[in-house]
Length: 215
Image (cartoon, rainbow, N blue to C red; front, side, top):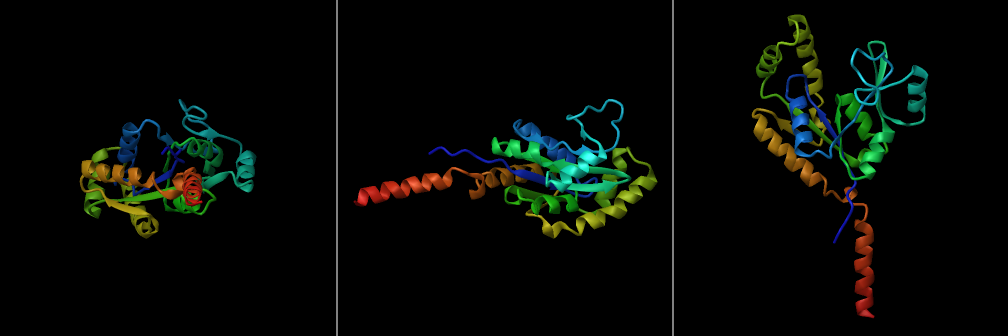
């Protein structure tokens, strides 16, 4: 039996420092067919950024029209600019059997789950093993000033408080073990009934064959 698979919208969320980005990169190394959702933004490109690779850069009017037309799976207004996930490239990918990976917060995840592609969504939240470990990881990265780390820590609990709205929750106390669990989840969810568009026709064929045998 051969069935074509429809792709998943895989949402990874976590507070900053919990390991989400590392796990996302590992997933894409594990399966090169995975596509990463390229966000749209109304801000100007920064030096070295490429249109359609780093972001879909667009005018405010164009962005708002896409939202009005239902062509943004999720969107938000951040620091004077709009950001969002265009629906078109995602729909094209999942119809071709490719999973699409989203790095969004709980609000973006909720919007995607409530969209007309919601039934194809797999949402996973990554928890740190402790708040102390979360702070240690942020400090050890050496990327942020103390005041920035403080702001990230303040925001972390707001993110964590929405853990219950996700399909799966993983405690990232061991990166390798967490990644193995993540692969198991993705592999199983790919076989979800909603992801197998030809399954219904196959079962109808079985029914016709059965009825023919009984005649």
